[in-house]
Length: 337
Image (cartoon, rainbow, N blue to C red; front, side, top):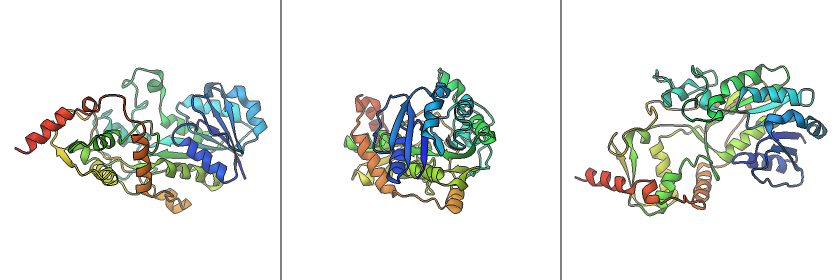
């Protein structure tokens, strides 16, 4: 049995991590701001506060006496410094959640640089971004100006205060996905649209994904396995398929019998906003071969759970306007001429 101190962990993947740890008999202390309620089961405690002021809670954390800390919201380099000041001498093992956005392919996809197209799949030693702060200038807020997982990883792995495991996550889907990756497909199908139009550039793009509960399982593996300390590991499904295939999978599970129409560039959308010539295919063979990771939830089960969650939270906007049904109908009509 272990004592696990979690920073964040109240939204999307976090509750799954807490539940798994609790089911396995570990004691858990969740440090969060109080914006989301957590299920305070036997063996799960909470400590409310701001992670920017983590050092103020040193005595409470010390009293809990954790064996490992999981930081799910370490977004800025200074967050690692906060960990060092607050936790030095209290806990040595650190599991830090990172992202595949550290790879150079990410900046090519987002047109931060002109290229060249990066080779796939991405392994842990693949080239990292040449440009720091990937969202700077794209959004006008402090988060965008300061967010970068590369210096976070470097500082955490280089710290003599911790034995660090870094997990690089792919695009993650599941119930309560804050990015709602499949929203436009699910709600159009549920609205009994006779057709669904996809831009050809997006339809053929391939991006690695994982179901939230499978990612949570990988995170718990890293918490429980001391041998994973010192490693940076990719997490991803092995099955990276084009976006079109994801839409077909959703259609099958929803028993939607409409037509998927793939439109030529410019017919449905003028600009995609991404360089869809660049795939993002993540190689997760290291964690599979060295630490025996495998998915615990089958693809259809995870996708079905995602669909149900999305349908339970429909958009408030008018779907016809939100998804531009008029434009879709025009594209389909022209394709039949």
